[in-house]
Length: 474
Image (cartoon, rainbow, N blue to C red; front, side, top):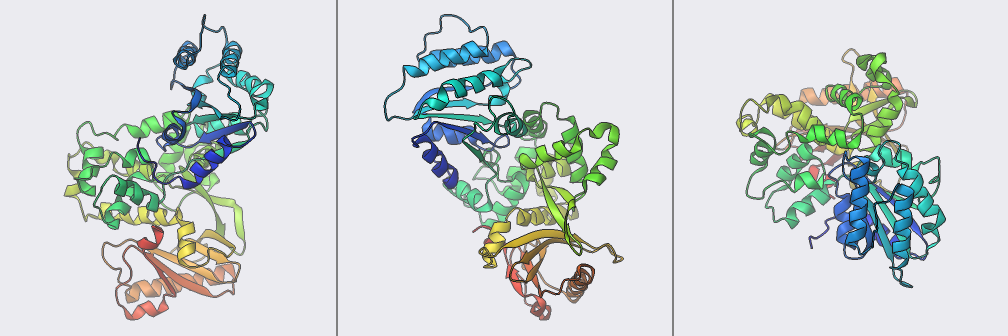
Protein backbone atom coordinates (compact mmCIF):
# COMPACT_ATOMS: atom_id res chain seq x y z
CA UNK A 1 0.00 0.00 0.00
CA UNK A 2 1.30 3.44 -0.94
CA UNK A 3 1.81 5.84 1.91
CA UNK A 4 -0.52 8.84 2.11
CA UNK A 5 1.50 12.05 2.24
CA UNK A 6 -0.07 15.03 3.94
CA UNK A 7 -3.87 15.21 4.23
CA UNK A 8 -3.69 14.84 8.03
CA UNK A 9 -6.80 16.94 8.63
CA UNK A 10 -8.83 15.18 5.92
CA UNK A 11 -7.81 11.76 7.28
CA UNK A 12 -8.79 12.78 10.80
CA UNK A 13 -12.18 14.02 9.60
CA UNK A 14 -12.95 10.96 7.47
CA UNK A 15 -12.06 8.59 10.30
CA UNK A 16 -14.22 10.62 12.66
CA UNK A 17 -17.19 10.39 10.31
CA UNK A 18 -16.76 6.66 9.56
CA UNK A 19 -16.55 5.83 13.25
CA UNK A 20 -19.38 8.07 14.42
CA UNK A 21 -22.58 6.65 15.86
CA UNK A 22 -24.71 8.36 13.21
CA UNK A 23 -25.46 7.82 9.55
CA UNK A 24 -23.06 10.04 7.61
CA UNK A 25 -23.34 11.44 4.08
CA UNK A 26 -19.94 12.84 3.09
CA UNK A 27 -19.33 14.84 -0.09
CA UNK A 28 -15.64 14.86 -1.08
CA UNK A 29 -14.76 17.08 -4.01
CA UNK A 30 -11.83 18.80 -5.65
CA UNK A 31 -10.32 19.32 -9.07
CA UNK A 32 -9.09 16.55 -11.37
CA UNK A 33 -5.86 14.79 -10.30
CA UNK A 34 -6.00 16.11 -6.73
CA UNK A 35 -6.04 12.63 -5.10
CA UNK A 36 -9.64 12.15 -3.96
CA UNK A 37 -10.00 8.53 -5.08
CA UNK A 38 -6.51 7.66 -3.86
CA UNK A 39 -7.25 9.04 -0.39
CA UNK A 40 -10.51 7.13 0.09
CA UNK A 41 -9.19 3.89 -1.41
CA UNK A 42 -6.04 3.96 0.71
CA UNK A 43 -8.03 4.52 3.88
CA UNK A 44 -10.97 2.18 3.33
CA UNK A 45 -10.38 0.15 0.15
CA UNK A 46 -10.48 -3.16 2.02
CA UNK A 47 -13.47 -2.15 4.15
CA UNK A 48 -16.01 -1.11 1.52
CA UNK A 49 -19.42 -2.71 1.72
CA UNK A 50 -19.95 -1.38 -1.80
CA UNK A 51 -17.99 0.85 -4.16
CA UNK A 52 -18.57 1.97 -7.74
CA UNK A 53 -16.99 4.45 -10.13
CA UNK A 54 -18.83 6.43 -12.78
CA UNK A 55 -17.59 6.40 -16.36
CA UNK A 56 -16.48 9.82 -17.57
CA UNK A 57 -18.69 10.86 -20.53
CA UNK A 58 -20.44 7.48 -20.35
CA UNK A 59 -24.00 6.91 -21.53
CA UNK A 60 -26.91 5.95 -19.29
CA UNK A 61 -26.55 2.29 -20.30
CA UNK A 62 -22.83 2.31 -19.60
CA UNK A 63 -23.30 3.89 -16.17
CA UNK A 64 -26.00 1.36 -15.25
CA UNK A 65 -23.80 -1.51 -16.46
CA UNK A 66 -20.95 -0.21 -14.31
CA UNK A 67 -23.25 -0.05 -11.26
CA UNK A 68 -24.54 -3.60 -11.84
CA UNK A 69 -21.03 -5.02 -12.32
CA UNK A 70 -19.91 -3.39 -9.08
CA UNK A 71 -22.85 -5.00 -7.26
CA UNK A 72 -21.85 -8.39 -8.65
CA UNK A 73 -18.20 -7.85 -7.70
CA UNK A 74 -19.27 -7.33 -4.08
CA UNK A 75 -21.36 -10.51 -4.10
CA UNK A 76 -24.83 -9.23 -4.92
CA UNK A 77 -27.11 -11.48 -6.96
CA UNK A 78 -28.47 -9.34 -9.81
CA UNK A 79 -31.18 -11.28 -11.66
CA UNK A 80 -31.61 -8.63 -14.37
CA UNK A 81 -30.55 -5.12 -15.30
CA UNK A 82 -32.59 -2.62 -13.22
CA UNK A 83 -35.06 -0.67 -15.30
CA UNK A 84 -34.09 2.67 -13.73
CA UNK A 85 -31.96 4.19 -10.98
CA UNK A 86 -34.72 3.90 -8.41
CA UNK A 87 -34.71 0.12 -8.94
CA UNK A 88 -30.90 0.06 -8.85
CA UNK A 89 -30.78 1.76 -5.46
CA UNK A 90 -33.48 -0.54 -4.07
CA UNK A 91 -31.24 -3.42 -5.17
CA UNK A 92 -28.30 -1.77 -3.39
CA UNK A 93 -30.37 -1.23 -0.22
CA UNK A 94 -31.42 -4.88 -0.05
CA UNK A 95 -27.85 -6.01 -0.65
CA UNK A 96 -26.45 -3.74 2.09
CA UNK A 97 -28.94 -5.18 4.56
CA UNK A 98 -27.14 -8.52 4.17
CA UNK A 99 -23.78 -6.87 4.94
CA UNK A 100 -24.76 -5.16 8.15
CA UNK A 101 -22.96 -6.18 11.33
CA UNK A 102 -23.80 -4.53 14.62
CA UNK A 103 -21.11 -2.04 15.64
CA UNK A 104 -19.12 -2.33 12.39
CA UNK A 105 -18.93 0.58 9.91
CA UNK A 106 -20.80 0.06 6.67
CA UNK A 107 -18.93 2.15 4.07
CA UNK A 108 -20.43 2.90 0.66
CA UNK A 109 -18.27 4.78 -1.85
CA UNK A 110 -19.61 6.26 -5.10
CA UNK A 111 -16.73 7.75 -7.09
CA UNK A 112 -17.09 10.17 -10.02
CA UNK A 113 -20.68 10.72 -8.95
CA UNK A 114 -21.43 13.44 -11.57
CA UNK A 115 -20.85 10.92 -14.37
CA UNK A 116 -23.90 8.89 -13.28
CA UNK A 117 -26.18 11.89 -13.72
CA UNK A 118 -26.77 11.56 -17.45
CA UNK A 119 -29.52 13.63 -19.07
CA UNK A 120 -33.01 12.89 -17.68
CA UNK A 121 -31.72 9.79 -15.89
CA UNK A 122 -33.25 10.61 -12.50
CA UNK A 123 -30.03 9.53 -10.76
CA UNK A 124 -29.91 12.34 -8.18
CA UNK A 125 -33.59 11.85 -7.24
CA UNK A 126 -32.99 8.13 -6.77
CA UNK A 127 -29.91 8.80 -4.66
CA UNK A 128 -31.94 11.19 -2.53
CA UNK A 129 -34.68 8.61 -2.04
CA UNK A 130 -32.10 5.94 -1.11
CA UNK A 131 -30.62 8.23 1.55
CA UNK A 132 -33.83 9.70 2.94
CA UNK A 133 -35.90 6.50 3.04
CA UNK A 134 -33.33 4.06 4.40
CA UNK A 135 -29.62 4.91 4.52
CA UNK A 136 -30.01 7.92 6.84
CA UNK A 137 -31.63 5.62 9.43
CA UNK A 138 -28.67 3.23 9.62
CA UNK A 139 -26.43 4.39 12.46
CA UNK A 140 -23.30 2.63 11.22
CA UNK A 141 -23.58 3.59 7.53
CA UNK A 142 -21.25 6.11 5.88
CA UNK A 143 -21.97 7.15 2.31
CA UNK A 144 -18.98 8.86 0.66
CA UNK A 145 -19.60 10.49 -2.71
CA UNK A 146 -16.79 11.93 -4.73
CA UNK A 147 -16.39 13.91 -7.94
CA UNK A 148 -13.95 16.01 -9.95
CA UNK A 149 -16.71 18.18 -11.43
CA UNK A 150 -16.55 20.43 -8.38
CA UNK A 151 -19.22 22.89 -9.48
CA UNK A 152 -21.62 20.00 -10.17
CA UNK A 153 -20.94 18.52 -6.73
CA UNK A 154 -21.62 21.85 -5.02
CA UNK A 155 -24.71 22.74 -7.05
CA UNK A 156 -26.34 19.30 -7.19
CA UNK A 157 -25.27 17.64 -3.93
CA UNK A 158 -24.04 20.14 -1.35
CA UNK A 159 -26.54 22.89 -2.30
CA UNK A 160 -29.26 20.60 -3.65
CA UNK A 161 -32.74 22.17 -3.60
CA UNK A 162 -34.65 18.89 -3.93
CA UNK A 163 -34.61 15.61 -2.03
CA UNK A 164 -31.01 16.06 -0.90
CA UNK A 165 -31.56 19.55 0.49
CA UNK A 166 -29.53 19.83 3.73
CA UNK A 167 -28.94 16.06 3.70
CA UNK A 168 -25.14 16.20 3.38
CA UNK A 169 -23.76 15.76 6.88
CA UNK A 170 -20.19 16.76 5.96
CA UNK A 171 -18.30 18.14 3.00
CA UNK A 172 -14.56 18.04 2.38
CA UNK A 173 -12.94 20.20 -0.28
CA UNK A 174 -9.65 18.53 -1.16
CA UNK A 175 -7.25 21.28 -2.19
CA UNK A 176 -3.83 21.30 -3.84
CA UNK A 177 -0.78 20.50 -1.74
CA UNK A 178 1.12 23.28 -0.04
CA UNK A 179 4.84 23.68 -0.65
CA UNK A 180 5.57 21.68 2.50
CA UNK A 181 3.32 18.82 1.43
CA UNK A 182 4.96 18.89 -2.01
CA UNK A 183 8.36 18.63 -0.37
CA UNK A 184 7.18 15.67 1.75
CA UNK A 185 5.79 13.92 -1.33
CA UNK A 186 9.04 14.29 -3.26
CA UNK A 187 11.10 13.23 -0.27
CA UNK A 188 8.93 10.13 0.14
CA UNK A 189 9.81 9.31 -3.48
CA UNK A 190 13.51 9.71 -2.65
CA UNK A 191 14.13 12.96 -4.52
CA UNK A 192 17.41 14.68 -3.68
CA UNK A 193 16.24 18.14 -4.69
CA UNK A 194 16.88 21.37 -2.83
CA UNK A 195 14.05 23.80 -2.16
CA UNK A 196 14.85 25.90 -5.21
CA UNK A 197 14.12 22.91 -7.46
CA UNK A 198 11.00 22.02 -5.46
CA UNK A 199 9.76 25.62 -5.69
CA UNK A 200 10.28 25.59 -9.46
CA UNK A 201 8.34 22.34 -9.77
CA UNK A 202 5.52 23.79 -7.68
CA UNK A 203 5.34 26.91 -9.81
CA UNK A 204 4.97 24.81 -12.97
CA UNK A 205 2.71 21.99 -11.75
CA UNK A 206 1.06 23.41 -8.64
CA UNK A 207 0.39 21.19 -5.64
CA UNK A 208 -1.31 18.52 -7.77
CA UNK A 209 -0.13 15.10 -6.54
CA UNK A 210 -0.77 13.32 -9.84
CA UNK A 211 1.42 15.75 -11.78
CA UNK A 212 4.11 15.77 -9.11
CA UNK A 213 4.30 11.98 -9.26
CA UNK A 214 5.22 12.27 -12.95
CA UNK A 215 8.54 13.84 -11.97
CA UNK A 216 11.64 11.62 -12.09
CA UNK A 217 14.14 11.77 -9.28
CA UNK A 218 17.10 11.13 -11.64
CA UNK A 219 16.33 14.26 -13.67
CA UNK A 220 16.68 17.94 -12.80
CA UNK A 221 13.65 20.20 -12.78
CA UNK A 222 14.59 21.52 -16.23
CA UNK A 223 14.95 18.01 -17.68
CA UNK A 224 11.61 17.00 -16.19
CA UNK A 225 9.83 20.02 -17.67
CA UNK A 226 11.24 19.34 -21.13
CA UNK A 227 10.08 15.72 -20.93
CA UNK A 228 6.61 16.55 -19.60
CA UNK A 229 5.82 19.57 -21.79
CA UNK A 230 8.26 20.01 -24.67
CA UNK A 231 9.24 16.55 -25.89
CA UNK A 232 7.42 14.76 -28.69
CA UNK A 233 4.23 13.15 -27.31
CA UNK A 234 4.88 14.87 -23.97
CA UNK A 235 2.70 13.61 -21.14
CA UNK A 236 1.10 16.91 -20.09
CA UNK A 237 0.65 18.60 -23.45
CA UNK A 238 -2.97 17.41 -23.74
CA UNK A 239 -3.82 17.59 -20.05
CA UNK A 240 -5.01 21.20 -20.13
CA UNK A 241 -7.94 20.42 -22.42
CA UNK A 242 -8.82 17.26 -20.46
CA UNK A 243 -8.77 19.15 -17.17
CA UNK A 244 -11.50 21.61 -18.11
CA UNK A 245 -13.55 19.05 -20.02
CA UNK A 246 -13.61 16.96 -16.84
CA UNK A 247 -14.50 19.87 -14.60
CA UNK A 248 -17.28 21.33 -16.77
CA UNK A 249 -19.85 19.91 -19.18
CA UNK A 250 -19.58 22.96 -21.45
CA UNK A 251 -16.00 24.20 -21.00
CA UNK A 252 -15.80 26.75 -23.84
CA UNK A 253 -16.65 29.81 -21.73
CA UNK A 254 -14.25 28.65 -19.01
CA UNK A 255 -11.41 28.31 -21.54
CA UNK A 256 -12.10 31.90 -22.61
CA UNK A 257 -12.12 33.26 -19.04
CA UNK A 258 -8.84 31.51 -18.21
CA UNK A 259 -7.22 32.68 -21.44
CA UNK A 260 -8.11 36.31 -20.64
CA UNK A 261 -6.94 36.09 -17.02
CA UNK A 262 -3.66 34.45 -18.06
CA UNK A 263 -2.74 37.54 -20.08
CA UNK A 264 -3.18 39.89 -17.13
CA UNK A 265 -0.96 39.09 -14.19
CA UNK A 266 -2.72 41.44 -11.77
CA UNK A 267 -6.18 40.10 -12.50
CA UNK A 268 -9.37 41.69 -13.82
CA UNK A 269 -12.69 42.86 -12.47
CA UNK A 270 -15.91 41.16 -13.49
CA UNK A 271 -16.65 44.15 -15.73
CA UNK A 272 -13.24 43.83 -17.40
CA UNK A 273 -13.85 40.15 -18.11
CA UNK A 274 -17.33 40.82 -19.45
CA UNK A 275 -16.02 43.51 -21.82
CA UNK A 276 -13.23 41.31 -23.14
CA UNK A 277 -15.42 38.26 -23.63
CA UNK A 278 -18.34 40.19 -25.09
CA UNK A 279 -21.79 40.21 -23.57
CA UNK A 280 -23.18 37.83 -26.16
CA UNK A 281 -20.83 35.06 -25.08
CA UNK A 282 -20.49 35.89 -21.38
CA UNK A 283 -23.75 34.27 -20.24
CA UNK A 284 -24.13 33.98 -16.49
CA UNK A 285 -20.59 35.11 -15.83
CA UNK A 286 -20.91 35.34 -12.04
CA UNK A 287 -21.75 31.64 -11.73
CA UNK A 288 -18.90 30.73 -14.09
CA UNK A 289 -16.42 32.70 -12.01
CA UNK A 290 -17.75 31.06 -8.84
CA UNK A 291 -17.28 27.65 -10.47
CA UNK A 292 -13.63 28.43 -11.20
CA UNK A 293 -13.09 29.65 -7.63
CA UNK A 294 -14.60 26.42 -6.27
CA UNK A 295 -12.19 24.45 -8.46
CA UNK A 296 -9.14 26.35 -7.09
CA UNK A 297 -8.43 27.71 -10.58
CA UNK A 298 -8.91 31.41 -9.85
CA UNK A 299 -9.13 33.53 -6.72
CA UNK A 300 -11.27 36.53 -5.89
CA UNK A 301 -9.78 39.23 -3.72
CA UNK A 302 -10.71 42.67 -2.50
CA UNK A 303 -9.01 45.94 -3.38
CA UNK A 304 -8.20 48.87 -1.10
CA UNK A 305 -9.08 52.48 -1.63
CA UNK A 306 -10.20 54.50 1.37
CA UNK A 307 -12.29 51.44 2.17
CA UNK A 308 -11.83 47.76 1.43
CA UNK A 309 -14.07 47.20 -1.58
CA UNK A 310 -15.51 43.78 -2.33
CA UNK A 311 -17.90 44.80 -5.12
CA UNK A 312 -15.00 45.83 -7.34
CA UNK A 313 -13.14 42.63 -6.52
CA UNK A 314 -10.36 41.32 -8.72
CA UNK A 315 -10.33 37.83 -10.26
CA UNK A 316 -6.89 36.34 -10.78
CA UNK A 317 -5.65 33.07 -12.24
CA UNK A 318 -3.90 31.07 -9.49
CA UNK A 319 -3.80 27.58 -11.03
CA UNK A 320 -0.09 27.10 -11.68
CA UNK A 321 -0.52 24.37 -14.28
CA UNK A 322 -2.94 26.47 -16.37
CA UNK A 323 -0.68 29.52 -16.19
CA UNK A 324 2.37 27.50 -17.21
CA UNK A 325 0.56 25.79 -20.06
CA UNK A 326 -0.91 29.00 -21.50
CA UNK A 327 2.43 30.80 -21.19
CA UNK A 328 4.55 28.15 -22.87
CA UNK A 329 2.30 25.90 -24.95
CA UNK A 330 3.09 27.90 -28.14
CA UNK A 331 6.73 26.90 -27.63
CA UNK A 332 5.96 23.17 -27.35
CA UNK A 333 6.43 22.49 -31.06
CA UNK A 334 9.59 24.57 -31.44
CA UNK A 335 12.29 22.43 -29.84
CA UNK A 336 12.45 19.33 -27.65
CA UNK A 337 14.74 20.84 -25.00
CA UNK A 338 13.17 24.28 -24.97
CA UNK A 339 13.43 24.79 -21.20
CA UNK A 340 17.05 23.73 -20.85
CA UNK A 341 18.02 25.82 -23.88
CA UNK A 342 16.39 29.00 -22.52
CA UNK A 343 17.43 28.95 -18.86
CA UNK A 344 18.06 32.52 -17.75
CA UNK A 345 16.16 34.04 -20.68
CA UNK A 346 13.90 37.08 -20.09
CA UNK A 347 10.79 35.02 -20.88
CA UNK A 348 11.57 32.35 -18.29
CA UNK A 349 12.63 34.95 -15.72
CA UNK A 350 9.36 36.86 -16.19
CA UNK A 351 7.39 33.66 -15.61
CA UNK A 352 9.45 32.83 -12.50
CA UNK A 353 8.69 36.23 -10.98
CA UNK A 354 4.98 36.04 -11.72
CA UNK A 355 4.65 32.44 -10.52
CA UNK A 356 6.50 33.19 -7.26
CA UNK A 357 4.05 36.01 -6.53
CA UNK A 358 1.21 33.50 -6.91
CA UNK A 359 2.97 31.04 -4.59
CA UNK A 360 3.04 33.73 -1.92
CA UNK A 361 -0.64 34.56 -2.50
CA UNK A 362 -1.56 30.90 -1.97
CA UNK A 363 0.53 30.66 1.21
CA UNK A 364 -0.91 33.55 3.23
CA UNK A 365 -1.23 31.35 6.33
CA UNK A 366 2.48 30.53 6.19
CA UNK A 367 3.36 34.20 5.71
CA UNK A 368 1.27 35.21 8.72
CA UNK A 369 2.92 32.51 10.81
CA UNK A 370 6.39 33.67 9.78
CA UNK A 371 5.43 37.23 10.71
CA UNK A 372 4.16 35.88 14.04
CA UNK A 373 0.71 37.34 13.46
CA UNK A 374 -1.18 34.09 12.90
CA UNK A 375 -3.08 34.76 16.13
CA UNK A 376 -4.12 38.25 15.06
CA UNK A 377 -7.21 39.00 13.00
CA UNK A 378 -6.16 40.29 9.58
CA UNK A 379 -7.46 41.21 6.17
CA UNK A 380 -5.31 40.79 3.07
CA UNK A 381 -5.90 42.49 -0.20
CA UNK A 382 -4.34 44.13 -3.23
CA UNK A 383 -4.03 47.81 -4.04
CA UNK A 384 -3.91 49.69 -7.32
CA UNK A 385 -3.18 53.39 -7.53
CA UNK A 386 -5.80 55.46 -9.33
CA UNK A 387 -3.79 58.68 -9.23
CA UNK A 388 -0.07 58.08 -9.75
CA UNK A 389 1.32 58.34 -13.26
CA UNK A 390 2.91 54.89 -13.19
CA UNK A 391 -0.27 53.18 -11.88
CA UNK A 392 1.59 51.74 -8.90
CA UNK A 393 0.36 48.41 -7.56
CA UNK A 394 1.01 46.33 -4.46
CA UNK A 395 0.10 42.66 -4.79
CA UNK A 396 -0.20 41.84 -1.10
CA UNK A 397 -1.09 44.03 1.85
CA UNK A 398 -1.87 42.56 5.26
CA UNK A 399 -3.93 44.88 7.43
CA UNK A 400 -3.86 43.80 11.06
CA UNK A 401 -6.23 44.25 13.98
CA UNK A 402 -3.31 45.61 16.02
CA UNK A 403 -3.25 48.58 13.59
CA UNK A 404 -0.10 47.66 11.71
CA UNK A 405 0.09 47.21 7.93
CA UNK A 406 2.55 44.81 6.31
CA UNK A 407 3.15 46.06 2.78
CA UNK A 408 4.64 43.02 1.06
CA UNK A 409 7.05 43.28 -1.86
CA UNK A 410 7.61 39.90 -3.52
CA UNK A 411 10.79 39.22 -5.50
CA UNK A 412 12.08 36.06 -7.16
CA UNK A 413 15.83 35.81 -7.51
CA UNK A 414 18.08 32.75 -7.91
CA UNK A 415 20.62 34.43 -5.65
CA UNK A 416 20.16 36.87 -2.78
CA UNK A 417 18.13 39.87 -3.89
CA UNK A 418 20.08 43.16 -3.99
CA UNK A 419 17.99 46.13 -2.95
CA UNK A 420 19.37 49.00 -5.04
CA UNK A 421 18.90 52.73 -4.57
CA UNK A 422 16.44 52.88 -7.48
CA UNK A 423 14.42 49.93 -6.18
CA UNK A 424 14.39 51.37 -2.66
CA UNK A 425 13.16 54.74 -3.89
CA UNK A 426 10.43 53.05 -5.93
CA UNK A 427 9.23 51.17 -2.85
CA UNK A 428 9.27 54.32 -0.73
CA UNK A 429 7.27 56.23 -3.37
CA UNK A 430 4.80 53.37 -3.66
CA UNK A 431 4.33 53.31 0.11
CA UNK A 432 3.78 57.07 0.21
CA UNK A 433 1.23 56.87 -2.63
CA UNK A 434 -0.61 54.06 -0.88
CA UNK A 435 -0.83 56.07 2.35
CA UNK A 436 -1.98 59.17 0.52
CA UNK A 437 -4.71 57.48 -1.53
CA UNK A 438 -6.06 55.29 1.29
CA UNK A 439 -5.72 57.96 4.00
CA UNK A 440 -4.54 55.28 6.43
CA UNK A 441 -2.57 56.49 9.44
CA UNK A 442 -1.38 53.08 10.64
CA UNK A 443 2.37 52.35 10.64
CA UNK A 444 3.34 50.70 7.34
CA UNK A 445 6.02 48.04 7.59
CA UNK A 446 7.83 47.24 4.35
CA UNK A 447 8.00 43.46 4.22
CA UNK A 448 10.27 41.79 1.67
CA UNK A 449 9.47 38.22 0.60
CA UNK A 450 12.29 36.82 -1.52
CA UNK A 451 13.44 33.37 -2.52
CA UNK A 452 16.89 33.46 -0.94
CA UNK A 453 16.96 36.55 1.24
CA UNK A 454 18.46 40.01 0.83
CA UNK A 455 22.05 40.75 -0.12
CA UNK A 456 23.85 43.23 2.14
CA UNK A 457 22.83 46.78 1.21
CA UNK A 458 22.65 50.18 2.89
CA UNK A 459 19.00 50.31 1.76
CA UNK A 460 17.99 47.24 3.74
CA UNK A 461 17.36 49.48 6.75
CA UNK A 462 14.04 50.48 5.16
CA UNK A 463 12.88 46.85 5.36
CA UNK A 464 11.09 46.10 8.64
CA UNK A 465 10.38 42.39 8.03
CA UNK A 466 12.19 39.93 5.78
CA UNK A 467 10.90 36.50 4.72
CA UNK A 468 12.35 33.90 2.37
CA UNK A 469 10.93 30.91 0.52
CA UNK A 470 11.87 28.74 3.50
CA UNK A 471 9.13 30.47 5.47
CA UNK A 472 6.62 29.36 2.82
CA UNK A 473 7.63 25.72 3.38
CA UNK A 474 6.59 25.73 7.04
